[in-house]
Length: 279
Length: 339
Image (cartoon, rainbow over all chains, first blue to last red; front, side, top):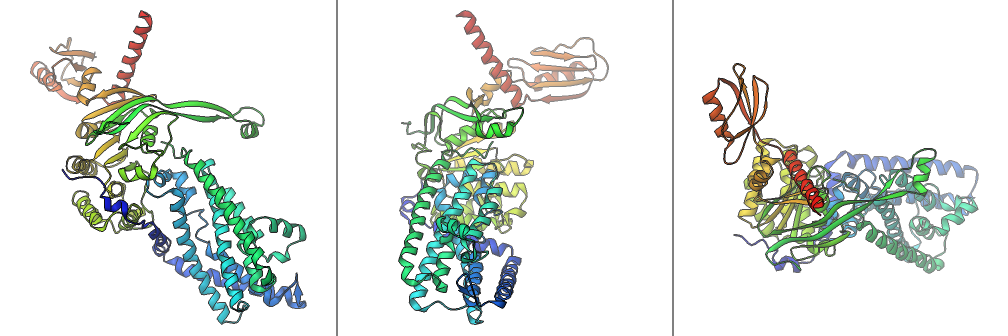
């Protein structure tokens, strides 16, 4: 009889679960048409936004404290940043939490030697890296075409990169809260759609936040959404001076820590109630 | 703690769910939302059982008996309301990651494979998740392929596989990391007989050659008869029977029925060692009793009557379970009368 014990060497091996990052690319490769549609869709969006803002600024040099050039840079980059987490918006992805909970396959998330939270993190990170690749390509193309401005020097680029990363972490945790809410709901489609609309609106993806009416701007500033897009882009286009960067980065860091604690608590509660899968 | 020879030990295992009952009448939806009425429902009730290492055990019961909930507690997915459970010496819900290395599971039609990727890529992802060493991974794949013939279709996206092909891949996925204990919750449901037999051969090999412990839930009595040495019967969350299938049949009217159609009406049907269940002139149903086998009854009928059709009908699982349940009710009723 062959021994069935897991070899000790296997227990000592470092985790290779990071290789789940590749699922994002493998999924996209399974539907090759997406590789054509994604850049086309992005190009159309960028073109339309460019035309829209050019029309808005036809009779004015400055609006909401921004020039046309700043506004174009802000809004086109906001669109690109929206692409980063495009696939991570898990409404219809088969191995997402909502679909897994609804179909009952979530049970397998609890039968693996990595926690469901870590599995989620690797899958989302893969999607973000993949989406980030497209966003970077778009950014380089826009820069090369002279459509948007480059960052304000090396210091500006470093501050923007740091703020962008922190902003993505904030959006990752917010999306995770919406996903994990599925453990308490029969369907979170409505919640997810509402959330992503609010996130895009209050983070600055649809319209730069400085164009918002004062009350909405105040609300957006007090909520974590603006950390995702508005904070890094305001630093990039110079609407927020670099001298204010430390407090902006600290605010983003605060949201990262606070939301990390909330998601940790939610996962703990969720793992106590894996009952939605039925029979 | 559990005995070292026991792969699984459950003592007084109980699971109770709170179920929200809907209000009726005006504004029922709103009232249910803000003032839900919760009912406690016990799905598994003081289940005590053990499974020894290298054993293949069938966990049987009608729909809603508590089989799947029991399996989910044994796999650590659900936390028991009370009682103790040890799987491979661990408390599964308290050490889920450690437990995951010791167990594998297939839950019926629920897939753990990546739907849009070829099955082989799912295997590679599971290898990375479970940190399966390369040599073990290749050996496992070759081993599984030799019986399940996976290589014929493992480069096909899972969404394009037939049910039988997918379930074979699910079996492989569940055992890729070489678990010592495997839980199979209705794994062959909806499969054709050829694939079912292939799957059974695979499971037999896993127990005999690799020493795995298998807990199987199924409604297929043929599967139980061909695979399982031991049967655990549960109903209403309680263990009703623990023993061999032969003993289950013997104790609870292991009732094979012989259905016979005569060439012409027969006034009286009598066969030694068989009880007459029903008779309407042209047709009769007889139940073998004691040491008499269905074949003995068939031979006796053919030798004594002009028979145009005869068949043996095995009692199904539902009949057996009903008999066990009724017998226990009778026993409980007698005990209360005596008291």
